[in-house]
Image (cartoon, rainbow over the protein chains, first blue to last red):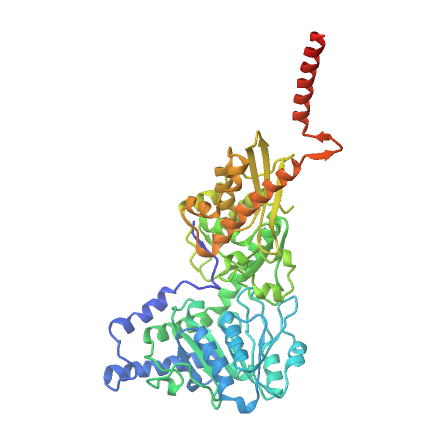
Length: 383
Length: 158
């Protein structure tokens, strides 16, 4: 059996989204910047896609910019806002559990002379308002805190944090990549100035993302040239990707209620049975302040990459935060940020469920996990 | 990040050789630790200067397990001197190659084995105490037997 439990990394394209995208490769393939009929037809579709995205997220269509991915959106927003708003201050605040594209963008700004603060999280993985208040001041240009963390799935109180940013005349940005469709995002109500998201995390296509930048915010563009997106992001509009993303977003929120119910039941069933069948396991981060598709579990005495590989050979795809699994051979800074014991930093597996998982797959995974853990523990020097 | 393990590496991960403990090892060493995410414990049984048995325990990734598995497979039966010289490059080539970020696993396996051999050798140290020699038990019995035979011969001569 093949079981895919790595939906936080990427998701399967919904076949309905594929059908929506296809004509933009084969018939309606005009360049949306061309002024002839084919081009202008594409341009109209582009506008309707922006309307759709804006409506679903409670924002304005004119503030929606399509990019190639959330990494690009985050680079554009973090660096673009900092560089264009130096008259408003010189401090950037990001959380200590941001995705590497936000973290590294902030690090690059630090090297360029900006003051960068990494606001800490508590052991639940939450940025408290008190923690943000401790580091923010009138010199702060931008606060960037992700709505849902990719490794441990914990959820932030975005509205409360945005309020604190505004009290200090700072802009508030949120990477909402992992929040869709788990959180109902209302840009206006929550006070979000800017956000980033990525199509392939909610059964849409890879290679397309959104950078939402509220009107009036100065941003230095990352990619310049042809002047698309009002000069904010040059490059031919990826019409198949854009139409796919907009439709996938629509489906995600249309079918949200039934999906959330199903995935929570499945996730809770999974966790209950893991606890029942396997000793020496612990959940990393809060179970309640967490999206219903995520589990990040510490398996005592055995190493993460070995667990991942063993499961992979049994047809099951998961993720880990161990040092051995990383390109830089460092263990996950997110797990370190929530205060995990240093002896347990390399024993964790992330299971992220999705739209296409079912109970049969979870039962198979529990059985395989039991065998994997038993095998690896049988020759572990850690008792 | 590409993690394309060779078939041989995968086999050694799924069916590791020489895995386990030796109750009363002649040499033992632990290398690495949980914090690093990489630990190997080596156990040696030595007879007549050769590695009679070698076992290992692992807290580590697939490479960690596979490199120790193939290394212990190769050095079993070797003399201590030969085993000490076994290079990490040979471990990598025996596996048919390792992803570049996993090469350090082969280095650690070889270092761990060397450490266990050093432990064995340190237990063999002869301590001179005012002319009296302390040797290991088997040798002592042999010497005793030899001197007993020599004594008998001398007494017979008498």
